[in-house]
Image (cartoon, rainbow over all chains, first blue to last red):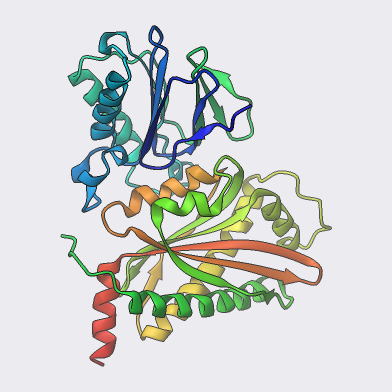
Amino acid sequence: MKEPISVGLGEHAISHDPEDILVAYGLGSCIGVAMIDPVSKVSGLLHAVLPRAKDGYQNGEKNASKFAESGIECLIAALIKERAIRTRLVVHLVGGANILLSSGMTHSFDIGTRNVEAAYATLNRLKIPVSTAEVGGHLGRTVRVYVADSRVTVRVAGEKEHEI
Amino acid sequence: MVKNLPFDQTILEHLRSIASEGVKNAAYGFSGMIGRKVRVGQTKGRFVPILTLPEIVGRPEEEAVGIYLRFEGDMVGQMMMIIPHQKAMELVDLLLDIPAGTTQHLGPMERSSLGELGNLCGSFFLNSIADSFGADFRPSPPAVVVDMVGAILDIVVATSGGVSEQILLVEANFTDGDRCVEADFWVIPDMNTVHDLLEKSAGR
């Protein structure tokens, strides 16, 4: 059994290998974007930190995957390079929670909600529909993409993994 | 407007050494709260790029307790005290002076007592840094978060956004007799305010 491929903050990963599991652990305000072409059996996962490059990080353009907007564009391009067809892409959004609200910190920037909005806006612009979304709320989530059967699962702290 | 500052190793080194002092000071606050002397083991402070923190901390899916404070004043920034979930429950036993192993979950009362501890440790920690600069910091009330380490980390990563890409990681442990609690302190100063503060204290 292979180790799952951990997709860290501001990274994306792509795989054809049916033994691979792509995972983004403990997404809080970050957003995970899973994209799968079920026909050519290629899967990708993005772990974006902020909505758009202009929202921070002086050298943002150096790392497109840090941002939901540029990260999604980058992930689609990488998938197409690996024989995915754009119109076949099945997209799942996970994360974008507002962890601090749950504890009464009122002046939170609520990056989570803005990450979710940026992901939807980008996908709308690119005319790619979102299949399922488990976003918002106040709890962290782990998302896993099983390349073998295109399954996507979510796990919340203290709970079991479930399929979305 | 974020200034484009050169990465200044000397400043970071200075901050690192006073942060270690800050942890010792935090232990005095801790001792005062539980009425017994809490000792601090070896503390290890270092600056790491913020995006590499998950690899350093490890196990991003594991549950932990984060006590989060922001501070304003002559220096602006945020700090997070991170305690593994099991250790946090042991800490509640210690704080409430009840037999070890009594606390099995973190409800409102347990969170509140951890928040108090974080407030105290955080204030002592920040005061120690402020004193060494002759500066004034005002910490926010603490927020207690119980979640996956990765999700707790997102709070500081997202909110520090364009301001700071370096995080001061201080690993500490507190002991009371044979009980030991490890805690990590993440301090994310706004480097612009650190520069201003150093210029000001140099000109004093």
